[in-house]
Length: 313
Image: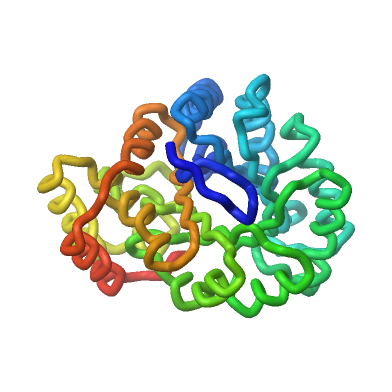
């Protein structure tokens, strides 16, 4: 696995998103999840991504158990700022006191003494971005975190945050059918030299062509997403499958290869963090890092975004 630099943090060119190991996409298995993390490390995938909001902290506990004894092989990323306690409505928090308490709680759940990359999970509703990043900067000074990240911010917020402390990475949804970041934050990423960490690079599984939307269990969050509630997007998955068959690769690998190649187009490092809870899909995803697309394939895949029907949420 090649490596890249996220604001001075050297990590694998592909990471592993862990949310689905605890919630969101149907039944989960603690044993399968830990086996998947272990296999990721064996294959050189060292950027392991979680958040305190994932299953109310369960995912951080799981990840902590999975990396126990192998901490030196991991660039550990987690997030804070989505407060799910107290009601069914999420509160996007960013007060300094909240962030510092949340960091201590994450360290405890993860069983580590520092977090390599600590993200503000969403633009805060309860504080200005400067207060939030200022608190994170103090955590850097205290040695509790190594680098600061933001998630789902636009260019203005990234510039304001970077004026307080350097930002190593912005994590946003980015895939063949989700390309908003190119226009909302792309210029700021380039100007400031901030990397993009791409979550849901496989369109929450849709771009793999393996998701039967009608068969998703009631516990699967995708049942509530607009893009999964219409048959109009099937043509996108079909087009990816056709290209993949011509290359004799899996559709997921083709979709991931597109994301891997975006760094040259965007002018910043781009690190996809496909999420999976099974070893076989992890191994397939890792193999995608070595696939090079032709100009014609890229042009065809680029055109699919315009065909997408429905919002991300």
